[in-house]
Length: 517
Image (cartoon, rainbow, N blue to C red):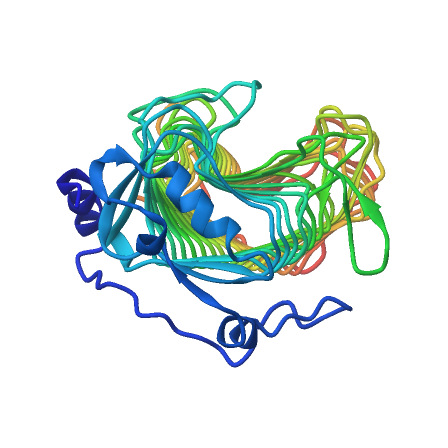
């Protein structure tokens, strides 16, 4: 057992104990469609083979690659290959081309050591499984657009990888290319990245053109990207026969990702091929060095219940979403982002629409708490910012910039506290609502700011907000202020006592201000 790897695992989870195999009655999560697999039956009713019967030595010195390959090939109709306790040196890939092959080890005591910069297991058969192995790469780091090596690479359908320990991946720990219904669960992946590292194609787990994958409960430390979802020139086809060259309908949940050189989770897409209908839930991401906690490109994604701590570097957003429509970002906790807590943007011309940002808690971002910026977009509309708590932003708490005057925005029920810029700053929105927000202690010494500021905004309802400053010297200048030609707004029923200069200032000749206190 490699002591350095054991030390890393112990550090990551002090309560870690070796996993025992937990078999569900069926391969849950792939029960839909025509390709249902009963994987317990596929193990019990298929032959077993022991790698020792094919000449493996397991002393860490002898090249056991050919012997293990011979053992795999012996299971031509499917079956289970036992890799017993030992250190197995291999010089190149072990190819699994038959269907329904299970590779079963004894946890980190079954250690396979790759001695060259190459793939280790390459799995093209359907219904294959890898359980309870330790796989170790060379420690070389390859992260550009050339061919990427994986300790476990799967292209077949219904792949299952669980309870494996992967150390020093060259490019990827685990990669799923083009398959359906892969399940990657409860693995430990420890890379050798230190500090800020650029490059896209190095990750603990990569999903490329994979459909309906389930990635759950993995721990990933010191890879460039923790988990990467992307496209890599491999076409897939789903159960309904729909061709696709994107990664979609995936569930990425309950993973722990530490010290990534770039992003914690990176969903890479293009304008022509966005990544769609993926769920990111319950992940914990800490201390990535120069990227976002989550960087998501695409539409119709759910980002729910994640915890993100201290994303650093020049791109250190908590959650960054590009080119979205029909996206929900909810119930996330984001602390100490080096840029913004949550940012929505467009990299290609198009519309930002039907976005819900709700019930997130954002603390101490180095710029804005929540930002939606139309730069690159043709319009923002149908956006709801609801029930968020933003505290300690170094500039604005909530910022929305729209330059085309077609909006239909709702900013409601948020709490914005102690931000050095404006509490809520909106630009050029119309037919929208800013309602029932609590905004306090905006601005700072030498830079007083307003609680809610409307720049060039017309035909909006600003209702039921509470804006105040509790500090001895009040830097929250106005509770609510119109500016830059705003007009035709209804600003009513707000409680605005306790601001520095006044509760309200309007500039529009047609703006009305009934029943404010």
